[in-house]
Image (cartoon, rainbow, N blue to C red; front, top):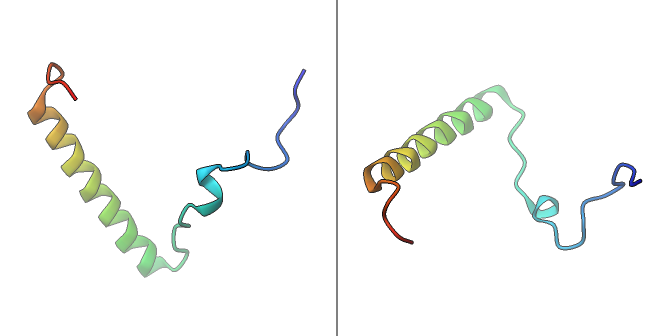
Length: 54
């Protein structure tokens, strides 16, 4: 049985992933950007529809 990982796998995207800011103002701006970006992506996906090919 495998136990918990001690580190991410080699070549993992998590080691180079950006870190969310910790200052309240920067975090607030980052969260607003994330919410807006997510909404734009979801709107585009809804507009395209599930039957459109890649």
